[in-house]
Image 1 (cartoon, rainbow, N blue to C red):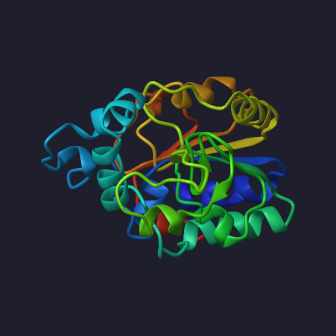
Image 2 (image 1 turned 45 degrees about the vertical axis):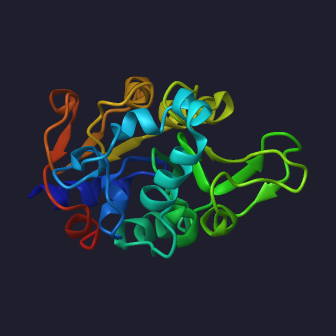
Length: 237
């Protein structure tokens, strides 16, 4: 039995699947990732991207931060791909318990998934840092300079920047879901960004699947490792 057939049989036998995904899930929708050959980290900027999207840089140079954010980190107008759609179908069928994602693009929800835990926040949620009024992503996109609320406060994306902590409630729900899963599929992530990558350690089940284009530090601990395109795999599930 080949790897895809093994995965397919495991999916059919499972009722509490948890999918833990990274940037590689969205790259097939056209959204660039950070660490690939042509990702943000490989491009030339006046400052390194990880510096620009840090909390201290946001505080110190907000105009530059928002210029970079609008140009490179506001993935609007993209559509879910086959992986997003299959996961949404599994949830509707009662097989998928949750999606835990490092992505900030909202494509899982756009595909129809309901139980999505966004570890790094979402570009679709933006709040005034003074009065907490909500603003859609288009408000950030269409504003000039530092986006301001009517009250005068800065409108900040609900995205976790470097130096900021992950949301405690989101982390807790993600951990519980992973601990209770009977099949954990980890896909499209290099598993090098912590604390998100550490969530895999909470899995107690017998079927850990890693799907990624390149090897990860956890390949040796997985029960099934597939180095293929996510789209190719999920189109066969």
